[in-house]
Length: 220
Image (cartoon, rainbow, N blue to C red; front, side, top):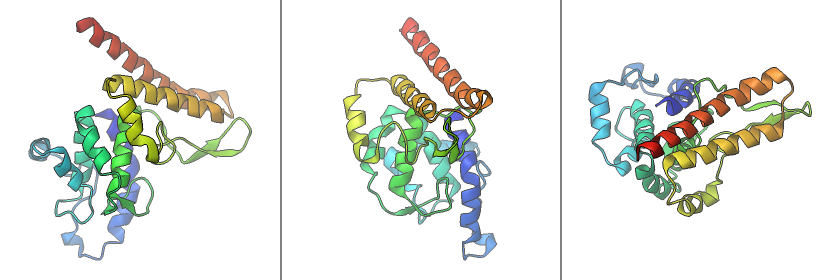
């Protein structure tokens, strides 16, 4: 899935730092390189587990090799709406998890929130992430992203999904991307190149989703 691939690349530095702080001998530390241990056997094992079992992979104390957390995210996102209820049920899970984005402590609930927000606001492969950027006013602004500023707030995420229970996943993703484009547009752009570089990938992904929705409706 291209959505999760982009974000997994963004996690690589955080995972490197986490490994560096691990007190175990290097021979006992499982590989945290994204995709380093992914293979047909792992994919088959991951696909055979239920949603709650996949979420267990998010815990840093889990007995599984840590790369499985990222395989689990990809599998849960592949399952789409069928995984939403389990992710919502674990939002308050405060067990320590793998680090997402920043080199700080994350909880299992944090990873569930990230997985939900990334599921409904899919990131194009050519979209460049950064924590802040210069807006039209010349000041630095925090950008919308999947752990804080997203299409739904942490305290209202369950209500957001319940209100859209009859929506398809593509409908949710279209709404998520429209929110994201609007949030970036409100910050504004220091240059025309910045506008094209930021909005271009998001608008292309939005067009792709709308075309996919039309194809699905035509084939129904």
